[in-house]
Image 1: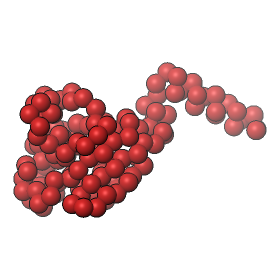
Image 2: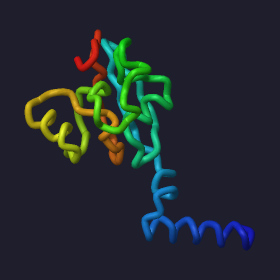
Image 3: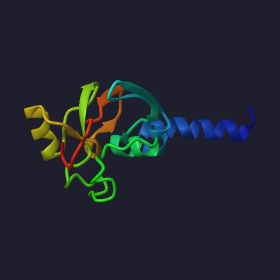
Image 4: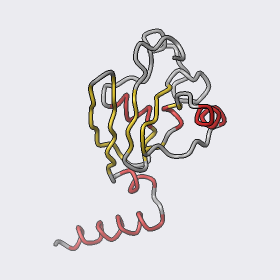
Length: 129
């Protein structure tokens, strides 16, 4: 290994140790997305917001009316709801906490993908459901 490569490797390991967000995101996590009777398996950067991970892979959590008219992932409009199946972390955002408590869809913009998870997109979604 060349001297510069070794330095880079140590820096990378050091960055992971101190919690550098960029180094943390280099690790990939499996995301299983169910829509109707089909499943798509994705490999997304750890720490990525679910909404961004879906959109980056050409999958939309929105219905036809909210593709363009939404809050862009700020947790205000509640139009990016998805149904958690397994591995979805505890809710932090107030709307997401209420949705989790009462069994409603969770906001994709408020879910961080930090571990393998499975979600279901809502079929025939209008605006919120």
